[in-house]
Amino acid sequence: MEARAYWTVPPGHGEVRTEQLAPPGPGEALVRATLSAVSRGTELLVHRGGVPEAVAERMRAPFQVGDLPGPVKYGYLSVGVVEDGEPDWVGLRVFCLHPHQDRYVVPVTALTPLPDDLPDRRAVLLGTLETAVNALWDGRPLYGDRVAVVGGGMVGACVTALLGRMPLTRLELVDPDPERRALAAGLGAVGVTPEEASGDCDLVLHISATSAGLQRSLELLGDEGEVVELSWYGDRTVAVDLGADFHARRLSVRASQVSRVSPHRAARRDHADRRQVAVRAATDERLDALLAGPTPLDELPALMDRLADGAPGLCHLVSYP
Image (cartoon, rainbow, N blue to C red):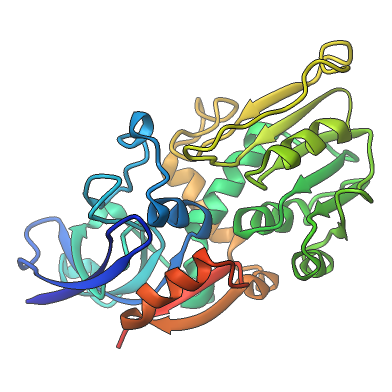
């Protein structure tokens, strides 16, 4: 059986390759992909060859083939239907952390069944929503808090959507891009420029992947407030000014990364529990505003080039014939 998959051949080049698939064995399933999605921040770093060698192994996707910087088959937002394998799974719609590929064989333990009321288009966001859930577990926003999300990309919009369901006193989505700010109202927040953003925040979640964004996040905090840092900078150097009132006001920066369940929940929740929280979050129809496309798999190399050049859109869908 043949399968077709997208490969990154950095710097700045991708191609669709054909490979042979073995039939599924015991405990495995053959999945026919219906949609996948480009995780724009991470996949563009891979596309540009910008992942530092020191963290390349830690950056491995669950079903990655090849090594960074490449050639590598990379990606982790795929939705499909089980066509063969374990009988109890055949016919189920599933989510999998798999690269862009039209058919693939994986252990059934890597699959998440999807509820009937969750469409494929929104189900591709599950991996990103899981990142957002973990960030909120790290940040622990409380009733009545004043919160800012700095950076309105794909992850930032998902974080904002989850926060928008909470009883906060104030929620602002901070981004210089007017199109991203315009999404805020539909997600339960107010869109503002970095200059307009309100200070004295109890919590700021930073996801702009820029030094300026991190600096502004610190400036927006109230005394003893915390920035939860979700940005992935790759091989870029980050510079912030800690010589002003950072120490006097006892500010904090906490890293958040989805590969490990937040330490504030790890004693009671595992990865499967966190994924089910993300499944429930994905039923929110407001998340449809994040989606663009779809683009056929054959056109994915050209799409990645356009995204690297700054083409708009948060979550670009990839379709399969």
